[in-house]
Length: 640
Image (tube, rainbow, N blue to C red; front, side, top):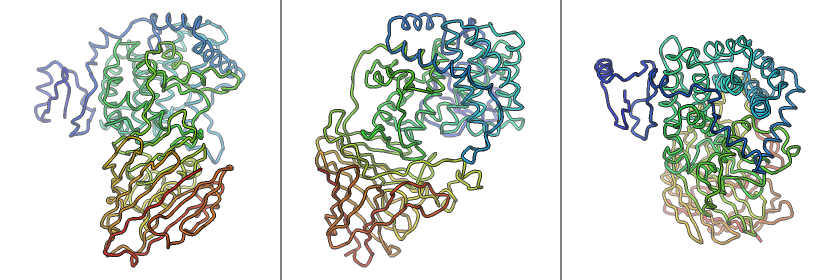
């Protein structure tokens, strides 16, 4: 096991752990089974029972809000047009909640819904954010009455569904906020019920009787952020009632969060894509805000290596078309409203680029139902003061578990040039067999697409094993997950090697940026080597260059591009037409080969996502055409 004492790493043999800990008078909870071998940065973690009693704020509210922070918020509500407008949207949403039935544990009989209570927990978190913020500002008795009714209803659920602990994480945050922001104004019976529920239905299920930590506690994906964040809120809410339980849960959360924060490194890429960046990161920033309001420190979350830099990755993931770079299990389109999570980074850096002011100033009616974290987000938005206006780079590369590269023309680019390419491997969290894949836009038209995510509910209800990632697992039967549904290379009509890591091995910025990805590990047993080079040749063109060395096992190499455009095959390439625009595809190196087009609408399997007019453009090179075992395939995409 490894512990941190004043930023010093101590490696301790299990046989001497107990004695040494007594000597140091340092409280470590034995069932926090940390992963061995972690060498990276750690969050500061002084939390013990005594620390909690000395340092936790005694006054309510203390979750995201405290007296000082609330005073600032109320001042900004008088003077700041953005804060006033977002509050109007929150108030409108709160009025909508008043018109709804009380929260219910009934899962909708909908084939698209998952077999869990996550949507219910999320709905409840939305309700509390809206109602409690309006109550906090206006002390509207209608809001207090409805909060009371909602809390009683949720606390009387049989369970918060700990077998799918995301449900518990979001519910715990909501219940904790409800009793914190009402600051003793709920009936004592409701407060007692809420705290008992936070302990019995929230925190205790996270401490199994077998002494083993749940997988999410030290995991490397968004579950870590959501579950630990929710239980931090719960622990702060019940700290006076059960200080030992609260302290050990917060201590575990701080240690555990480091494992998922590591995933942002070294440059800020969130391996699960931009949608999951919003999800996981939103809970990390809420956790940081709760720590600051309760303990006056975030224990190092803001300055964790690459965490702040991830805001650049998030901005670059927005394409001129209004879509996102939707790799992994990412949604296709960004929200039409301002990004509240990104605004936290704006509040911490003063960078105007992270503060989507125009979107925050849309009318509340146009915004409609807003983020379930809008209430807590309003607090840090009120702390934003513009200091700089640093734009994101026009060419950017981020390494890590799922490395990506971007080439853009910038916000004033008349051609709206946008390219995103990636490495990675299938076994990354929410990953696909998409190493070497790319998207490409010109003039607001997405020519090369990523199929993006598809609903989990229908697959899970049909018994489809979506989450296992072995080489022959069900996940790779899906077009959205396997290499045949991405703009990359396939060999011998086989799947990529699921754990073959494709890395960006070269990157150059400048007027003609370029990036090279080593795809060799993705083709173990299929090729000797493969490298893919992307070059922004001009403001309207992209060059894709593949250097391939075949092996005895190689039979055929297929260059692939997924598109929704209409395709006309021409000599030496093709012409693509979409939304009144035209794109030329030229096979520069193998002009004798004809392009072929395979329709994927309807898709190959009944379980596949249907994408209108989807097709795969292919250039197939049989091994017998490759001279001396090596070939270089060059394709140019160019627009008007």
